[in-house]
Image (tube, rainbow, N blue to C red; front, side):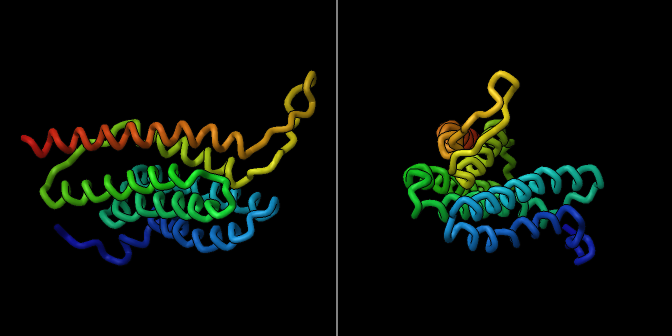
Length: 197
């Protein structure tokens, strides 16, 4: 297999992925004291990073510059920023520790199994469950980072609606946790069937 050159590696999709990783230290600094202002900027930074997650994959396919480096780094970047946000808000009781353990444990196990499968030349197709898991996790984390009550102009009849963003975040995190377990079991089942052949 030909090696990727530095010029091939430093393309726009991979740069976006690396920027997502570079945003993690700033996110962690903001969440060291997650008051209303810091939480808002942390949520904005996390949302922007989430957009680059979609954008780098879209650009890589559109421009025909999918690289081995990009395929390796992109999922790592996703997991790092999700886990960084969840771990940083743990000391402030914004998320149950067991949920973080379930999400982190699932990612470690599946990443390990993918590594084993790739060394054996086995390809296990990803299901839509993984995509749904990611979407719900991202929405949940944005809500948990915002945390406080926010007033929204909702409609003419109800011009002001107060929404507790922590409750919104927890609602989606429960869904994300269920899908996390479901998708993990689904992948383990597929892995076991492929290995058994």
